[in-house]
Image 1 (cartoon, rainbow, N blue to C red):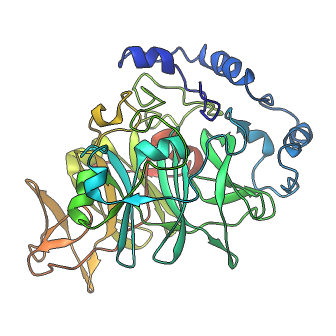
Image 2 (cartoon, rainbow, N blue to C red; image 1 turned 180 degrees about the vertical axis):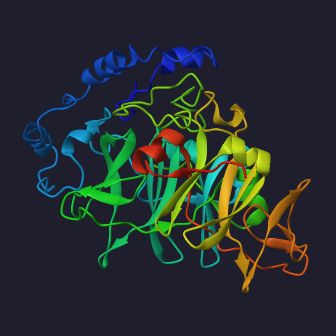
Length: 401
């Protein structure tokens, strides 16, 4: 195992047989604790908070552990030390012609567009680094991915008048990545964007819209868009999945999740999840696939949640390019120039009923009266259900009307 690599539940067996049943939940904690203990100090679950702080301060002398918004005992070691999973601080980008040589058409990429620039961040790279500190059209952003929660999110790195740089603490809470910033050494929850420990505890990062789509969709929508390079300054087996089989239906015990998963949905069922105006809602992929387009209203805003097949899982087979097609979901406001539109798929075409314009999965009208207009993207996540519901237990679950 590479020193920077998080312990992988059952990975050796799952690599040999793609559909090997998941390890028995009763055996999993002992196996993982044993593996991690060989390399890193591992505080026991439920340890006294004062003992935890004494343990952590040897590695985190600048972190103010007196300030925290969550019980410290909920934070556990995931195995690696600080930045043992190294973030990318000086990202390089290549053109699509160069990326075509190593990036599959259906591989998942996180897309961020700003000020005429568009960039794709392949999950085949993010899965090994989890954080990219970048700047796009003058906006400093943190591109993040927690493989254990399947949560790919982008944040604005500006907080209280300064730009923060983020890394990985090696800690988890509810199985989700806990990040840290180098300026104050505060700890941040990746899925919520909130500082949970340290001087900035209680501070919220701003979520930025970043759809998770196939590389082919990115290329069609942004033919001049650039792609995060594999030249990261680190040697990794990019294109391979170190968590092979993690999204198998047999996985009912997410890695180091404290407590039982919410029983309303299978733990690793994918959902499109968002919160607007204090209302949280999760749209299971299986229901979105049936509907294609869900015209909804949440937090006082009219939105459309779109689903389309053609995007592979990053957490299925050993080779991401050969993993199964799980599709993807994206979210937009559906009001354009004061008119609320109603969307539906007509074969391969996404059409609004009010004007008959045709739209791309990235929210651009490509034909019809509204050609050239763009829908306003809504920040959302494509998470595993257990992760979203662990942090948003009062979230509604979308059900067909």
